[in-house]
Image (tube, rainbow, N blue to C red; front, side, top):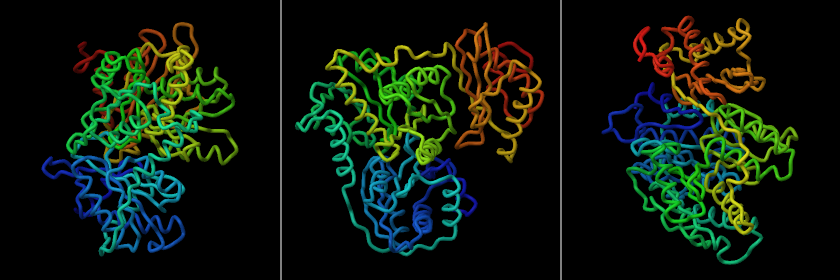
Length: 511
């Protein structure tokens, strides 16, 4: 791999690339690169923890995709070359790896995974005893890897997944106040593991007494571990809804390939994801009012009202699961009661779980609540019936054409900020912490429509999200935004997705 290619592997606060050269995609994540990244990671972790690599024990696991085992072995060679002790956890969910560092079973952890991305991609997620790594630290690792020269030493295998699931079982027993062999007896749960490590979770539920009839994707598939689909893919959700209803199950659980994200379907086939899922977890946590719930920046106005009505404080922060988690940790350190950090994408980290990004913990936690409610003749969905949801929502991606895409993104955001001074109908959101979020008062309402423009966490793209509680509101906002960006930013941005969204084809023509 050429030196210039290493930084291209950076993906937000993770590392990701194509691990199958035959796919012809860039950047390539080779075994040689993985070895050098392991060596560089060991040295950075040692500096971060004010020690030397030979004093460290690092846990390494991988998901079920085809390249995982080989990349893990190569990464481990780099760690041992740095004189680290290594705990080889083999096939394992991401939450178990983060948990191993958070609870002191290892000084740091590395998970070989590309999450929900296709089978031919792979990468690394890192964690230390004090949490995940920043984007700046990822860059530092990749720069150091360019010149690394590892020399291999020894490795110790360890079943971290089983130890992690034992702790998950203890949590279930504690929440249900039960020490019986099968505390989840009486609950029927359909699990879609997508061929990934979530299969471990399905077997875990069965051991705890759950019926799992109708579950799918429980065999590890190295070529499509949930990587062919997104959680919000209507086909996946529709299939799960049909399966739950046909099997008269209590709940459906869809897990990410590496187990760090989850979405749900209730007994009537209704999806519990995004704002609905955040609202549900918030309602359960706010049985004792006063807590602050940290989310990413694209949550709805209806969710903010819902959390407020339940006696909580809604705190929007930057997109990116590590950003949300770090902010929640910071707020707690300042004395603010913040039990949850959660993204609309299904990432959830509880304070009671050491702020580990853990879809399996979230699922087990909710299943406990579902069983308790079922005994009282109620359901999870009953808690969010008052959640106000938009009548329209649009998500677009506007490619940035300038080479310096950070500068171009900032210029576009400043254009919008300037317009709030010229147009009184554009209101800057008071909790604007990422990109720019503009509120509109439509049809006599107040703040009942909004759009947000922000730089993507992973790509040279401006992510645009718009929501309205009144019909026609999204088109109204996007039409104004298109006119502004066309005048001020054309040439710097590809505005075609926005043009098409407002019903135009080629220049000046109606579609």
